[in-house]
Length: 450
Image 1 (cartoon, rainbow, N blue to C red):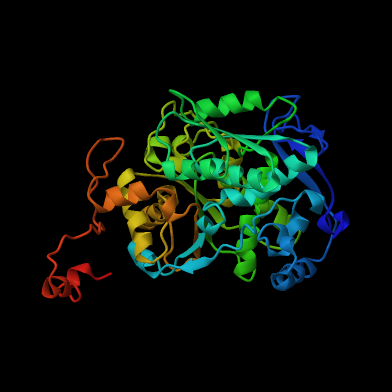
Image 2 (image 1 turned 60 degrees about the vertical axis):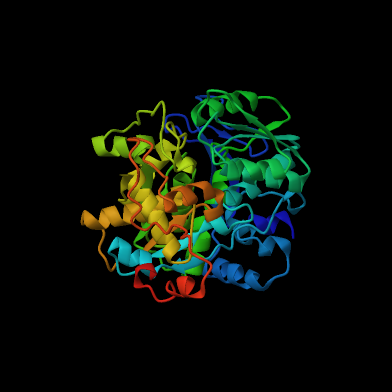
């Protein structure tokens, strides 16, 4: 495989400042995470080469049968849409290829006719982060970096640590001083990352630290302000459409933490329409927890700028972020697609998570915010029951087993109010006597039917 094949949809690519008043461009070979001229975020801008859309679609479909490691990756299978990185530098764990499930119980729960979940938690490290990490770590390798660095509430650290181990690179993880799902931290430890828990710091604090540390020449930053992370995550939408036969759904619903996914999804929409692969966009709905909802609050006020939440609070730790770096792009995505931004309560997240479990799927708490939002929007009359709705589940059920056990045993409370959650779908273990009749009575007890 040569580099020309990897660039076939693009004539050229460069880092570009997102600031409309700046728009400076820089070569992809420079290690940059913000614009040196104005300090704003960067993205990768492309010039289309003019390939026929049907040719690209057919090639991607054919690669499903290939034994090539890059074709077996659900990210690199679509490499024509990605920045050019030599195959010898690519680090892959066969990420992507995540399934779409039709969720009948959840559709009934939310009051819609049909509901699809794309479960990004079935990636190698259990979250959507692997989509972006394979591209960003490959770029780090191409640039000759030796140390990979990130701030994380859990999922980013797990993913970065795995890809660093695969690439033979050193991984350094900074995590907040509290409210971190230890199941995710366990992954980073297992993959060999040096894990530093910063006393008294929240996610936004540790992100500021890693941004400063990434100025060192041999250090490469892997948070979602890294434009190569965004490039990998945009493949989520490309892969989704490939699975749906290139039929664009009416709605796409995604949890909103640092808002990298929202930025990546919209970037994919813009580029696919530019390439003639789609004719319209879905409405993008971004969901935040009420205790960590700066974007939702800004949208509700009609504001063009967020007010950061100094001490974000939610048990959905993956979206417990008060100052998301990608808020400008997320706001632009909402405006362009006509989507919604919704804040949901701790109770709504917990009940939605249990409902997803009743479909035999399961997810971590932040993922369940999507179903909570679909239900809320339907009750508000903002969704038509017959419309096609796809919600993204971003993390695996086993990312935060403590949350699940506490919910089903009645020990989970609302972090904002301190009140116990109602647990309407709770399914606690039952203590029984060691007798056949005592056990058999539960075989036919309608109270325990799904």
